Amino acid sequence: MTDADLGVREPPPGARRQLASWIYRPRATVSGGPGGDSLASGESRGRWISNIMADLPALLGGFARATELEVSARSKGEGALVLEADEPGMLEQARDFIRQNDDVVEVCVTLTLVCAGLDLRPIEIDHGALLWIDIDLDENGRLDPATDDPIRLRLQLNTDIYAPLSWGDVRDNTALATLNADRLAGALERIERAIPAELIEIDAPDYPGLVDARGFRGP
Image 1: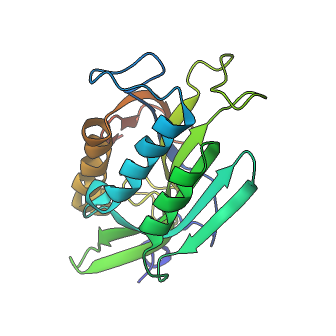
Image 2: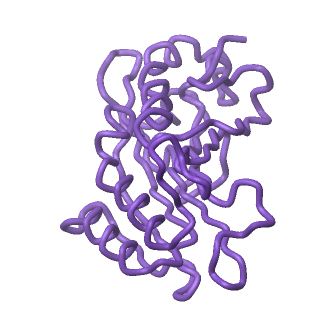
């Protein structure tokens, strides 16, 4: 069963068009976070991203599973490393690449959402979300001083199964949203606490007033 069968808006295969995004900055920053960590150097950023990749299954929990991973580096270009989930050791391969390249500018993890249908049976939504890490570097390969938040992590939803008010054929999506709300809320909470990260922006123009730090609210 797909989200099209459920009446919610379905993301086209491979789509990167977002319906709602939660954007964070790491608490370990250029000036050091609560633990004194700094992400000013490429080496420290590599360790930070590598740790996120190692913890990714726990971070996603029952919300989603990673199905594809793409890494871009300033010196090697966009999509310098592309891995599928069925490749042995996908996350470890990504960690090795990230640790060996101190000019990574983007990591994009494609997620298959793990949800519950109205009959309580599990359903999966391919390309249902993306987890991004974006890093802005200047021409010298350093964190761009012209950017307020040169390191950002973003959880991007491509489907509105969690929204009580859907833009699919069936507008009232309250039952499905209620069944799956805790999965999304749990993932958002783990991002803040486990990475740790600070929420700096919610981008959800189609849902004004309906999205907060833990997901969707009722209309």
